[in-house]
Structures are given as structure tokens and as C-alpha cells.
Length: 226
Image (cartoon, rainbow, N blue to C red; front, side):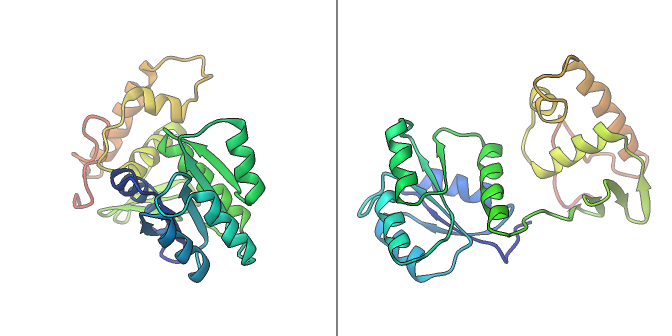
């Protein structure tokens, strides 16, 4: 669930990409969508935001000019540039006018979220969720415990990590390779077959507390399962 106290301005003229990024960022913040540079500059200068995510190539005013206008107006809101340009010169120009970070398209959802959260933390803003709720199942992130109603679900480390990963990607198909890369890491000396073992154990433990259909084909189904 988005933290409504954290506000992000997204300036991106591609409607589909803007909507996709908004869906990603809405997990951690309230997102204001803007589709051209002029409106983006107005919002950036006139309204308070905790972070601005902006494309470079925009109609009416480009991203570099938006940042320059902000910094000239002594607005220090962190800015993450999203762009298809990946040359060193382009990056240097962005940093010279006051950008705080740079992410080249195409990018992975998790890298975008990691960079956004890092910039927010640097600005002293905590976006960390304390709890994930799926129906009456609660994942308590502060102490790595899981409850269903008043019942505790005893999960070992990797089982818990898989459940959290699936819960944060609710209603999205997640491949076993993705689970393996996220939970075990690319440098692990084990194989992806270990994912099946942990998923089976996780399913069995969830079924023991009445969550028979929570995980299907490696995805969390929906919020309505109780």
C-alpha cells in the first residue's frame, strides 16, 4: 500500500510508460502524473514533492531545463532522471544542472524502486513498510513473523523471504528464476531446483492455517482470500 505522506512527481510523456512507472511507484508513494515539460516545471517549482522522476526528452521543455529552473529557484527536491540516452556526456550534463541520480531505459522495476527509495532515504524519508496484509494474513516485516488471524505461521528464513517477495509482487506471475535470483542471489552455488522445495514447504504451511489457494503457480492470488 502506498505511503500517502510521500509524494512523487513523475514527468514522462509516454502515456503507457507513465502509467507503468506510476503503478510501480504507487507501492511506496502517492504519484502525480505529468505528461509534458511545461506542466512538469510548474509542478516542480510550485508544489511540494519529496522526489521528482523525470524523462529528459519531453515536449515543451526538456528535463534538463526543468532541473535548472528548479535549482535556480533554490528548490532542492531530489531528481531521478529517466532517459534512453546513456552516453557519459548526457549523464554529466544531468548532474551538472543538479540531477541526483540517472537511470537508463529500459530498466527493471526493482532497480527503479531501489534508486527511488535510496534517494528518499538520503532526504530523510522512510518508505519502509512495517506490515503486508493479504486478507487476514499479515507479514510483520519488523520481526520477520507471519500470522493468519491469531495463528502464527512458523516459516524458516527462505520460506519467509519467498512469501515477502511474492506478496510485494501480488497478482503478478513470478518465475522460479526470479525467485531464485532475488532470494538466493546470482552468486549462489545451489540450483533453481531448490525453489520448488521451499515453495512446496511454504504452500504446506499456509494450507495448515487455511490458506489453501494463496499461492498458485508462484504468485499471490488476491487480497480477498481469508
